[in-house]
Image 1 (spheres, rainbow, N blue to C red):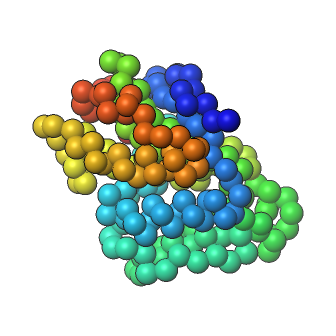
Image 2 (cartoon, rainbow, N blue to C red; image 1 turned 90 degrees about the vertical axis):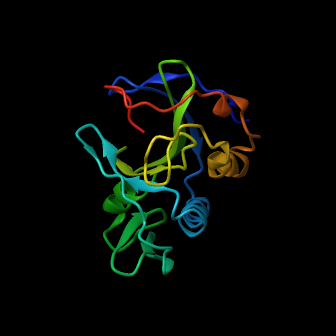
Image 3 (cartoon, rainbow, N blue to C red; image 1 turned 60 degrees about the vertical axis):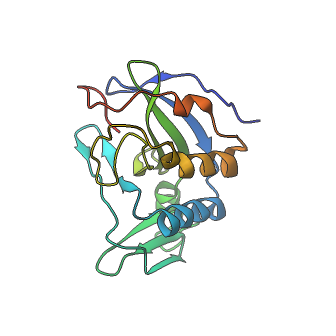
Length: 190
């Protein structure tokens, strides 16, 4: 059974968030990638977000193709693409295959100083527990070009709600719609 309200944990950077584990089988991860990039490509931001670097990339267009080869999902936008190892990778041998493959995935929501959610996302980690990608989900407090909104647009939580329902069996959470806004604080990141 999925924990509907996991504990709030302190992040290494001083933020606070809640995390829900996601399945890491190839089928589930490929479905997640397809849903996010085929249906919400113009509303999400993605990249690696870690201490010292935050790559918040917007897709230039819908993907021209999402494909699988030797355990790697490729999301191809035409001029550029990226790869994520989400399945069994054999070409580099068993040890590198275990390291490269996604072994942990999570939904998360950041919790602000007022104890309300401020941002929502998905993270993937490899066999060394290194971040492979963060997907920043549509945020009711930010426009699609990351400008702060005067009033929240709760419809922006549609993808978050879909992911919770599909992968966790959870209904929308009223807590997600209780926030007052998004502020860049010294320790607050998306």
